[in-house]
Image (cartoon, rainbow, N blue to C red):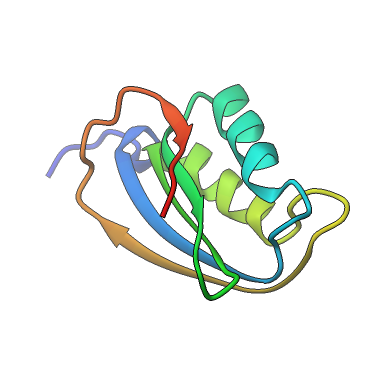
Length: 99
């Protein structure tokens, strides 16, 4: 096992956000924030009114983005954030996807 810091590891987090998160600019704020942080992946609205996102990047940056998800944009009212970690996929950008 190497001595390098785990904060430089590339990780992938699959996140489900529930609450008042549709119709409040959550997806576009997510794209803006993730892009500013240099993350790759995607975000979309789900039919059950949740938002789903995948964030890929350095561990410390992905964790920062997950903390942001608990707040979201000003009009959002986040109730829960569920996170699962996956193997990185090598996304090229961060984008909005349609369900």
